[in-house]
Length: 204
Ligand SMILES: [Zn+2]
Image (tube, rainbow, N blue to C red):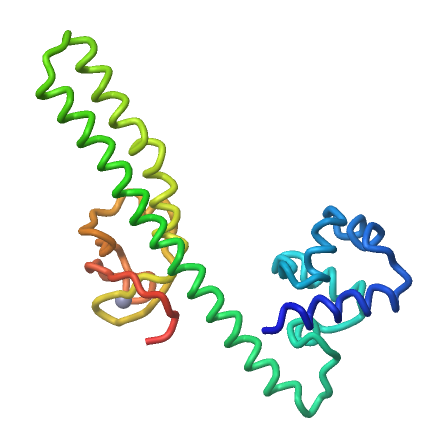
C-alpha cells in the first residue's frame, strides 16, 4: 500500500467534500494532527475509523486503501491485493510484538538475576537482602501481563490435533501451562487439549 498516494487521495476527497482538516477531525472525534498525518502519508487511518471516514469522503474502504476510486472491473483484483497487504502488515506488526516480548523477558530476568546475585554474595543486612530481591521481581510482575497479552493477540495458536489456527481468550492463555511460547490449550474446534505452537499466519 502506498501511504503517500492514500494521503493525497484523502486530502483531495476532503477538499471535494468542502471540509477543512479540523472539520473532518471533529466529525471523526480525533485531532486535526491525526488527519494531517494521514494526508502527508506518515500514518494510516486506524481501522476503527475507516468506515466513518469513507462514508464522509463518499468512497469505499477499498478505494481508500488503493488511494483512488476503483472501477468495478478492477475492484476484485485490487481488493485482493489490499487484503493481502493488510495481512502482511499485521504479520509484520505481530512479529515485532513477539520480538519485543522476548526482549522484555530477557531484561526482566537479567535484572532479577543481577539483584539476586548481589543479594546472595554481598554481605548485607537481611532486610536489605529481601528488599533487593523484591525490587528484582517487580519488573517481572509488571511486565508479565503485557507479555501474556502480546502472546495472546499476536499471531495465532495452532491445535496440534486438527491444525486449526485461532486467537485464544486472554484468561485461557494466562492460566495455561507453557514451554516458551508453546502453550497447553484447548482447541475451540475439536475441543481437545494439546501443546499448541504460535504461528504468525492464519493459514497453514
Ligand atoms: Zn483442534
